[in-house]
Image (cartoon, rainbow, N blue to C red; front, side):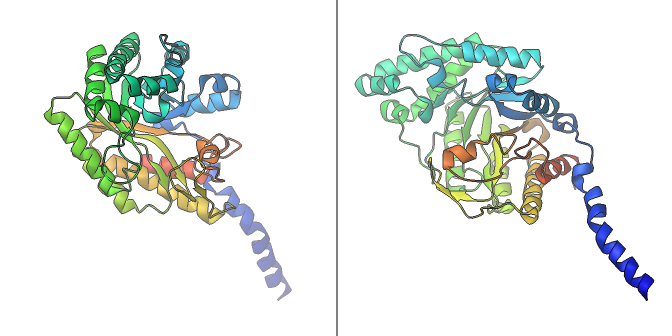
Length: 362
Protein backbone atom coordinates (compact mmCIF):
# COMPACT_ATOMS: atom_id res chain seq x y z
CA UNK A 1 0.00 0.00 0.00
CA UNK A 2 2.84 2.40 0.83
CA UNK A 3 4.56 1.71 -2.50
CA UNK A 4 1.30 2.32 -4.38
CA UNK A 5 0.83 5.71 -2.67
CA UNK A 6 4.45 6.59 -3.35
CA UNK A 7 4.04 5.83 -7.05
CA UNK A 8 0.91 7.97 -7.16
CA UNK A 9 2.73 10.98 -5.72
CA UNK A 10 5.70 10.48 -8.07
CA UNK A 11 3.31 10.64 -11.03
CA UNK A 12 1.65 13.78 -9.64
CA UNK A 13 5.01 15.47 -9.17
CA UNK A 14 6.53 14.67 -12.57
CA UNK A 15 3.38 15.08 -14.71
CA UNK A 16 3.73 18.89 -15.05
CA UNK A 17 7.32 18.46 -16.22
CA UNK A 18 6.24 15.89 -18.81
CA UNK A 19 3.54 18.22 -20.07
CA UNK A 20 6.03 21.10 -20.24
CA UNK A 21 8.59 18.95 -22.06
CA UNK A 22 6.07 18.04 -24.74
CA UNK A 23 4.61 21.52 -25.15
CA UNK A 24 4.57 23.18 -28.59
CA UNK A 25 7.18 25.67 -27.42
CA UNK A 26 9.77 22.90 -27.52
CA UNK A 27 9.19 22.32 -31.21
CA UNK A 28 11.70 23.71 -33.67
CA UNK A 29 11.19 27.44 -34.23
CA UNK A 30 11.04 27.50 -38.00
CA UNK A 31 11.01 30.63 -40.11
CA UNK A 32 7.44 31.35 -41.17
CA UNK A 33 8.55 32.44 -44.64
CA UNK A 34 10.27 29.09 -45.12
CA UNK A 35 7.02 27.20 -44.53
CA UNK A 36 4.48 29.43 -46.32
CA UNK A 37 3.96 29.21 -50.08
CA UNK A 38 2.97 32.90 -50.26
CA UNK A 39 4.82 35.95 -48.92
CA UNK A 40 4.77 36.62 -45.18
CA UNK A 41 5.27 40.23 -44.15
CA UNK A 42 5.56 42.56 -41.21
CA UNK A 43 5.24 46.30 -40.68
CA UNK A 44 8.60 47.73 -39.70
CA UNK A 45 10.53 50.79 -38.64
CA UNK A 46 14.02 50.43 -40.15
CA UNK A 47 15.62 52.76 -37.58
CA UNK A 48 14.17 50.80 -34.67
CA UNK A 49 15.24 47.49 -36.18
CA UNK A 50 18.78 48.76 -36.68
CA UNK A 51 19.02 49.45 -32.93
CA UNK A 52 17.56 46.11 -31.79
CA UNK A 53 19.56 43.08 -32.85
CA UNK A 54 17.09 40.55 -31.48
CA UNK A 55 14.16 42.14 -33.32
CA UNK A 56 16.19 42.34 -36.52
CA UNK A 57 17.18 38.67 -36.29
CA UNK A 58 13.56 37.71 -35.65
CA UNK A 59 12.40 39.73 -38.64
CA UNK A 60 14.97 38.33 -41.04
CA UNK A 61 14.24 34.77 -39.97
CA UNK A 62 10.49 34.91 -40.41
CA UNK A 63 9.55 37.48 -43.06
CA UNK A 64 10.22 38.08 -46.76
CA UNK A 65 7.92 41.07 -47.27
CA UNK A 66 7.90 44.47 -45.54
CA UNK A 67 5.51 47.37 -45.12
CA UNK A 68 6.50 50.70 -43.59
CA UNK A 69 4.64 51.53 -40.42
CA UNK A 70 4.63 55.28 -41.08
CA UNK A 71 7.67 56.17 -43.21
CA UNK A 72 5.88 56.00 -46.57
CA UNK A 73 2.73 57.93 -45.65
CA UNK A 74 1.99 61.39 -46.99
CA UNK A 75 2.72 63.20 -43.72
CA UNK A 76 6.26 61.82 -43.91
CA UNK A 77 6.80 62.57 -47.61
CA UNK A 78 5.01 65.91 -48.11
CA UNK A 79 5.32 67.46 -44.67
CA UNK A 80 6.15 70.88 -46.06
CA UNK A 81 4.57 72.65 -49.01
CA UNK A 82 6.59 72.60 -52.20
CA UNK A 83 8.99 69.79 -51.27
CA UNK A 84 9.07 66.01 -50.99
CA UNK A 85 11.22 64.17 -48.48
CA UNK A 86 12.00 60.70 -49.84
CA UNK A 87 14.75 59.80 -47.38
CA UNK A 88 12.51 57.53 -45.27
CA UNK A 89 11.41 55.65 -48.40
CA UNK A 90 14.98 55.38 -49.66
CA UNK A 91 15.85 53.69 -46.35
CA UNK A 92 13.00 51.22 -46.82
CA UNK A 93 14.15 50.44 -50.36
CA UNK A 94 17.74 49.98 -49.20
CA UNK A 95 16.63 47.62 -46.41
CA UNK A 96 14.43 45.59 -48.76
CA UNK A 97 17.13 45.24 -51.40
CA UNK A 98 19.84 44.37 -48.87
CA UNK A 99 17.72 41.62 -47.31
CA UNK A 100 15.99 40.38 -50.47
CA UNK A 101 12.51 41.32 -49.25
CA UNK A 102 9.44 42.48 -51.12
CA UNK A 103 8.53 46.11 -50.41
CA UNK A 104 4.90 47.14 -50.15
CA UNK A 105 3.88 50.80 -50.50
CA UNK A 106 1.68 51.92 -47.60
CA UNK A 107 -0.04 54.23 -48.46
CA UNK A 108 -0.58 56.92 -51.11
CA UNK A 109 -3.92 58.41 -50.01
CA UNK A 110 -5.20 58.14 -46.43
CA UNK A 111 -7.33 60.74 -44.73
CA UNK A 112 -5.42 60.43 -41.44
CA UNK A 113 -2.09 60.70 -43.23
CA UNK A 114 -2.75 64.07 -44.88
CA UNK A 115 -0.67 67.07 -43.73
CA UNK A 116 -2.58 70.11 -42.46
CA UNK A 117 -1.33 72.38 -45.26
CA UNK A 118 -2.94 70.11 -47.86
CA UNK A 119 -6.24 70.12 -45.99
CA UNK A 120 -6.15 73.91 -46.00
CA UNK A 121 -5.44 73.94 -49.73
CA UNK A 122 -8.43 71.67 -50.33
CA UNK A 123 -10.75 74.16 -48.66
CA UNK A 124 -9.45 77.07 -50.71
CA UNK A 125 -8.84 75.54 -54.14
CA UNK A 126 -10.06 72.03 -55.07
CA UNK A 127 -8.40 72.37 -58.51
CA UNK A 128 -5.05 72.87 -56.81
CA UNK A 129 -5.72 69.75 -54.73
CA UNK A 130 -6.35 67.73 -57.89
CA UNK A 131 -3.12 69.04 -59.40
CA UNK A 132 -1.24 68.11 -56.24
CA UNK A 133 -2.75 64.61 -56.22
CA UNK A 134 -1.50 63.96 -59.73
CA UNK A 135 1.95 65.41 -59.17
CA UNK A 136 2.41 63.64 -55.82
CA UNK A 137 1.47 60.19 -57.12
CA UNK A 138 3.32 60.56 -60.43
CA UNK A 139 6.49 61.77 -58.68
CA UNK A 140 6.35 59.26 -55.84
CA UNK A 141 5.37 56.08 -57.68
CA UNK A 142 7.60 56.68 -60.71
CA UNK A 143 10.61 57.30 -58.43
CA UNK A 144 10.25 53.76 -57.06
CA UNK A 145 9.09 52.02 -60.22
CA UNK A 146 10.28 48.42 -60.11
CA UNK A 147 11.36 48.77 -56.47
CA UNK A 148 7.96 48.88 -54.77
CA UNK A 149 5.99 45.78 -55.71
CA UNK A 150 2.52 47.10 -54.91
CA UNK A 151 0.77 50.14 -53.44
CA UNK A 152 -2.18 50.85 -51.24
CA UNK A 153 -3.45 53.58 -53.49
CA UNK A 154 -6.36 54.46 -51.20
CA UNK A 155 -6.64 53.41 -47.57
CA UNK A 156 -9.89 53.51 -45.57
CA UNK A 157 -12.05 55.34 -48.09
CA UNK A 158 -15.27 53.97 -46.59
CA UNK A 159 -17.02 54.87 -43.35
CA UNK A 160 -16.05 52.95 -40.21
CA UNK A 161 -19.50 51.33 -40.17
CA UNK A 162 -21.76 50.56 -43.12
CA UNK A 163 -21.25 50.82 -46.85
CA UNK A 164 -20.98 54.54 -47.60
CA UNK A 165 -17.97 56.60 -48.64
CA UNK A 166 -16.06 58.33 -45.87
CA UNK A 167 -16.53 62.09 -46.24
CA UNK A 168 -12.87 62.98 -45.99
CA UNK A 169 -11.12 66.10 -47.21
CA UNK A 170 -10.43 64.27 -50.48
CA UNK A 171 -14.06 63.24 -50.91
CA UNK A 172 -15.47 66.65 -50.02
CA UNK A 173 -13.16 68.47 -52.42
CA UNK A 174 -13.07 66.07 -55.38
CA UNK A 175 -16.02 63.71 -54.86
CA UNK A 176 -15.69 59.93 -54.98
CA UNK A 177 -13.77 60.30 -58.25
CA UNK A 178 -10.62 61.03 -56.22
CA UNK A 179 -10.31 57.26 -55.82
CA UNK A 180 -10.46 56.54 -59.55
CA UNK A 181 -8.03 59.39 -60.26
CA UNK A 182 -5.53 58.11 -57.70
CA UNK A 183 -5.55 54.63 -59.22
CA UNK A 184 -5.13 56.00 -62.74
CA UNK A 185 -2.25 58.26 -61.73
CA UNK A 186 -0.50 55.36 -59.96
CA UNK A 187 -0.91 53.09 -62.98
CA UNK A 188 0.47 55.78 -65.29
CA UNK A 189 3.53 56.08 -63.06
CA UNK A 190 4.17 52.32 -62.80
CA UNK A 191 2.06 50.10 -65.08
CA UNK A 192 3.52 46.93 -63.52
CA UNK A 193 2.73 47.70 -59.88
CA UNK A 194 -0.21 45.94 -58.21
CA UNK A 195 -2.66 48.58 -57.01
CA UNK A 196 -4.73 47.90 -53.87
CA UNK A 197 -7.67 49.37 -52.08
CA UNK A 198 -7.30 48.70 -48.33
CA UNK A 199 -9.74 48.95 -45.42
CA UNK A 200 -10.59 47.73 -41.91
CA UNK A 201 -13.68 45.98 -40.51
CA UNK A 202 -14.51 44.52 -43.92
CA UNK A 203 -13.99 41.06 -42.44
CA UNK A 204 -16.79 41.56 -39.86
CA UNK A 205 -19.09 44.36 -41.08
CA UNK A 206 -20.87 42.79 -44.05
CA UNK A 207 -22.59 46.09 -44.93
CA UNK A 208 -19.19 47.77 -45.23
CA UNK A 209 -17.85 44.80 -47.20
CA UNK A 210 -20.69 45.08 -49.72
CA UNK A 211 -20.10 48.82 -49.97
CA UNK A 212 -16.47 48.14 -50.88
CA UNK A 213 -17.60 45.55 -53.43
CA UNK A 214 -19.93 48.10 -55.04
CA UNK A 215 -17.08 50.59 -55.21
CA UNK A 216 -14.75 48.04 -56.83
CA UNK A 217 -17.43 47.06 -59.33
CA UNK A 218 -17.94 50.73 -60.19
CA UNK A 219 -14.19 51.23 -60.66
CA UNK A 220 -13.94 48.19 -62.91
CA UNK A 221 -16.83 49.41 -65.08
CA UNK A 222 -14.92 52.67 -65.58
CA UNK A 223 -11.80 50.77 -66.59
CA UNK A 224 -9.93 51.92 -63.49
CA UNK A 225 -6.82 49.76 -62.96
CA UNK A 226 -7.57 48.42 -59.46
CA UNK A 227 -5.85 45.06 -59.03
CA UNK A 228 -5.89 44.24 -55.32
CA UNK A 229 -8.04 44.29 -52.18
CA UNK A 230 -6.48 44.56 -48.74
CA UNK A 231 -8.23 43.21 -45.65
CA UNK A 232 -6.52 44.87 -42.68
CA UNK A 233 -7.69 42.01 -40.42
CA UNK A 234 -7.34 43.71 -37.05
CA UNK A 235 -9.36 40.90 -35.57
CA UNK A 236 -11.08 40.43 -32.25
CA UNK A 237 -11.47 37.01 -30.70
CA UNK A 238 -15.27 37.39 -30.70
CA UNK A 239 -15.59 37.82 -34.50
CA UNK A 240 -17.15 34.59 -35.83
CA UNK A 241 -14.99 32.63 -38.24
CA UNK A 242 -18.08 32.16 -40.40
CA UNK A 243 -18.33 35.93 -40.95
CA UNK A 244 -14.63 36.20 -41.78
CA UNK A 245 -14.94 33.32 -44.24
CA UNK A 246 -17.98 34.89 -45.93
CA UNK A 247 -16.21 38.23 -46.41
CA UNK A 248 -13.04 36.59 -47.71
CA UNK A 249 -15.12 34.63 -50.20
CA UNK A 250 -16.86 37.79 -51.44
CA UNK A 251 -13.50 39.54 -51.74
CA UNK A 252 -11.97 36.65 -53.68
CA UNK A 253 -14.92 36.65 -56.09
CA UNK A 254 -13.71 40.04 -57.41
CA UNK A 255 -10.74 38.25 -58.97
CA UNK A 256 -8.38 40.77 -57.33
CA UNK A 257 -5.20 39.98 -55.44
CA UNK A 258 -6.11 39.49 -51.77
CA UNK A 259 -3.74 40.72 -49.07
CA UNK A 260 -4.33 40.19 -45.35
CA UNK A 261 -2.45 43.37 -44.72
CA UNK A 262 -2.36 44.32 -41.03
CA UNK A 263 -3.06 41.15 -39.07
CA UNK A 264 -3.32 40.95 -35.29
CA UNK A 265 -5.88 39.40 -32.93
CA UNK A 266 -6.98 41.04 -29.67
CA UNK A 267 -8.99 39.72 -26.74
CA UNK A 268 -10.50 43.03 -25.62
CA UNK A 269 -12.69 45.46 -27.56
CA UNK A 270 -12.61 49.07 -28.78
CA UNK A 271 -14.83 51.57 -30.56
CA UNK A 272 -12.43 52.03 -33.53
CA UNK A 273 -11.34 55.44 -32.25
CA UNK A 274 -8.06 56.57 -30.71
CA UNK A 275 -8.22 55.95 -26.97
CA UNK A 276 -11.38 53.89 -27.38
CA UNK A 277 -10.21 50.67 -25.76
CA UNK A 278 -12.65 48.61 -23.69
CA UNK A 279 -10.68 46.60 -21.15
CA UNK A 280 -12.41 43.28 -20.53
CA UNK A 281 -9.43 41.06 -19.74
CA UNK A 282 -6.64 42.31 -17.47
CA UNK A 283 -4.63 39.11 -17.33
CA UNK A 284 -3.64 36.57 -19.97
CA UNK A 285 -4.45 32.93 -19.22
CA UNK A 286 -3.33 29.65 -20.79
CA UNK A 287 -6.89 29.12 -22.02
CA UNK A 288 -6.87 32.50 -23.78
CA UNK A 289 -3.52 31.72 -25.39
CA UNK A 290 -4.88 28.43 -26.72
CA UNK A 291 -7.97 30.15 -28.12
CA UNK A 292 -5.84 32.78 -29.83
CA UNK A 293 -3.66 30.06 -31.37
CA UNK A 294 -6.78 28.41 -32.78
CA UNK A 295 -7.98 31.74 -34.19
CA UNK A 296 -4.67 32.35 -35.97
CA UNK A 297 -4.71 28.81 -37.32
CA UNK A 298 -8.26 29.18 -38.62
CA UNK A 299 -7.46 32.50 -40.28
CA UNK A 300 -4.60 30.96 -42.26
CA UNK A 301 -6.69 27.95 -43.20
CA UNK A 302 -9.47 30.22 -44.45
CA UNK A 303 -7.03 32.26 -46.51
CA UNK A 304 -5.50 29.14 -48.06
CA UNK A 305 -8.79 27.39 -48.76
CA UNK A 306 -11.00 30.33 -49.84
CA UNK A 307 -8.63 32.57 -51.80
CA UNK A 308 -7.43 30.96 -55.07
CA UNK A 309 -3.68 30.42 -55.14
CA UNK A 310 -3.13 32.92 -57.95
CA UNK A 311 -4.87 35.63 -55.85
CA UNK A 312 -2.90 35.05 -52.64
CA UNK A 313 -0.75 38.16 -52.36
CA UNK A 314 0.25 37.19 -48.83
CA UNK A 315 -0.26 37.81 -45.12
CA UNK A 316 1.34 40.74 -43.29
CA UNK A 317 1.40 41.21 -39.51
CA UNK A 318 0.88 44.70 -38.09
CA UNK A 319 3.17 44.18 -35.16
CA UNK A 320 5.12 40.99 -34.55
CA UNK A 321 5.44 41.05 -30.76
CA UNK A 322 3.22 42.18 -27.90
CA UNK A 323 5.88 44.60 -26.64
CA UNK A 324 5.78 46.82 -29.71
CA UNK A 325 2.16 46.42 -30.79
CA UNK A 326 0.32 49.58 -31.87
CA UNK A 327 -2.80 48.40 -30.03
CA UNK A 328 -1.63 49.54 -26.59
CA UNK A 329 -0.76 53.10 -27.51
CA UNK A 330 -3.57 53.79 -29.95
CA UNK A 331 -6.48 52.33 -27.99
CA UNK A 332 -4.90 52.77 -24.53
CA UNK A 333 -5.55 49.12 -24.02
CA UNK A 334 -3.64 46.30 -22.39
CA UNK A 335 -3.71 43.36 -24.75
CA UNK A 336 -1.66 40.57 -26.32
CA UNK A 337 -2.39 40.60 -30.08
CA UNK A 338 0.75 39.15 -31.66
CA UNK A 339 2.36 35.78 -32.32
CA UNK A 340 5.47 36.62 -30.27
CA UNK A 341 5.39 37.82 -26.67
CA UNK A 342 6.99 40.87 -25.04
CA UNK A 343 10.29 39.00 -24.81
CA UNK A 344 10.12 38.16 -28.52
CA UNK A 345 9.53 34.49 -27.74
CA UNK A 346 6.97 32.47 -29.73
CA UNK A 347 3.49 32.22 -28.25
CA UNK A 348 1.01 29.42 -28.91
CA UNK A 349 -0.29 31.79 -31.60
CA UNK A 350 2.93 31.27 -33.55
CA UNK A 351 2.46 27.51 -33.51
CA UNK A 352 -1.21 27.90 -34.41
CA UNK A 353 -0.28 30.05 -37.38
CA UNK A 354 2.30 27.48 -38.47
CA UNK A 355 -0.28 24.69 -38.18
CA UNK A 356 -2.56 26.70 -40.44
CA UNK A 357 0.23 26.86 -43.01
CA UNK A 358 1.05 23.16 -42.91
CA UNK A 359 -2.27 21.41 -42.28
CA UNK A 360 -3.50 19.55 -45.35
CA UNK A 361 -6.58 21.11 -46.92
CA UNK A 362 -9.65 19.00 -47.67
